Image: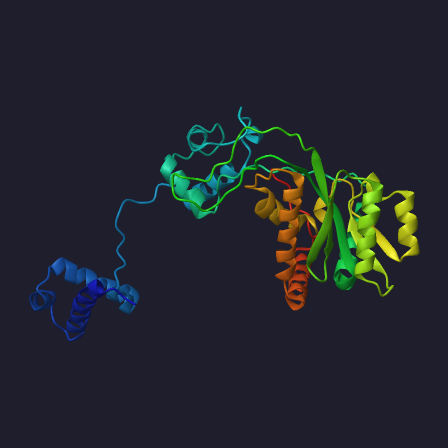
Length: 352
């Protein structure tokens, strides 16, 4: 919708054009519209050049732009580049340091920009100040084969795929968290504590098809505890058909006792590559455990902590997602991976 302030201008210009087309002289038109003769001639000349588009003069106020689009692209590129790659003696940019570098760059391009304008450029291009994250590169020679097998079973047999991993260590101490509270009056936990109860490990099992999570808290990781968890997974599908278990490539997960039991009970162990725990689907479900059960807690002993953990698991499984929703999400993720032409879990490009 056009602004109402532009209507009188359009009307006066239209009257000038119509009066000129009727053969009136410029002084006569000026008296008719009560305007300046030079302005009348300008309107007539613009009509002869661009036609009816002259009814909208499209005036732009303010000084010309000092920073071009190429300069803006250069600023964004420098902000995304690590300072060390530009021979600067620091690991990250601040707005002041980046402004100084852009203004005194020894290269071919120098851009003078204020810190506030720089902040606007970065906000416009969705560049924000974020913590650095790390990752480990897998040195497993069978990484491609293992990832391909995990992707195959999760795509073709989701109802018979299970996941196992340990979540821990679980300690008895006040854990920092977050909660809704009155401004200036946050919930507080004691800062003095003694670790007198030792640590525990939650041996978790997850059903990909049913979206259910269960497990047992043990004193430590061991092959016997892993075998007990795998046996609970086998009991979840008592029909005797093959099941597939995805688990990390740890020594406590692949002893001869576990391998022989798996072969007898039609359980295929799909190990993730070394330093590639992100390929384990259960990792995405440990985050809510840490956020809603561990963070913000101050349990007196492991018994109380274990009860709280299992209470959350009962609530979570009672509110599990519908199987049709899970299937639709798997199809959508597969479509996105196919379009991007890279396997799930892997980054498209490394950080600069």
